[in-house]
Length: 215
Image 1 (cartoon, rainbow, N blue to C red):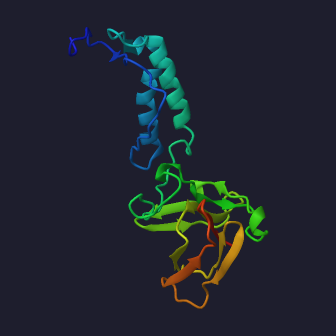
Image 2 (cartoon, rainbow, N blue to C red; image 1 turned 180 degrees about the vertical axis):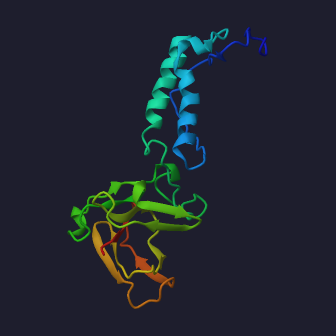
Image 3 (cartoon, rainbow, N blue to C red; image 1 turned 90 degrees about the horizontal axis):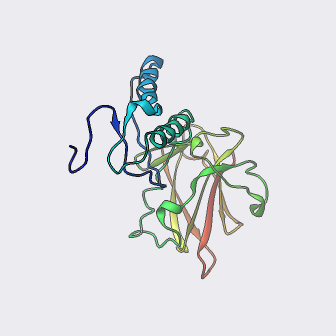
């Protein structure tokens, strides 16, 4: 017995259902191909119906095996489980956003950071960004994209903090498809925090803010 259900204990008990929604689980393993192969080998045991025991009221053994086959197939795609949190200020108690935090795009890039504001083609891509603590660090032109951050907010007056990196950069600030400021970080010392005050034109529908690394 398993609770009030019959289960012989031989094989994996079939789940009661297959939810449509998925979640992401991070597993940290030693950085060696052998360890990766071992983990994959263990998961591969789940793709065979004979390794499942029909649980009373559960899905069929074939359905369980088929769903795990999909999971293992998707696991080989490095971008499948890649997620990046929204910046630390994106909290409903801090910013009156028009969109929920989980729906924000935030991190990505543009193919040409020098085109007119209305032609900037933001592409969501977390691959360009590494987030540690409250700091987002971009890698310039990964996959042909220049790093960019895009978000929507109803705030009209705010100050953005730009940290000067080891290499001087040119940062472009665009609000509602209008260039608002171009920042050259070369006069500042590496690691220095640069305050960038921005004022958006009045709007009842909020503002689309894009920050683009030009060089």
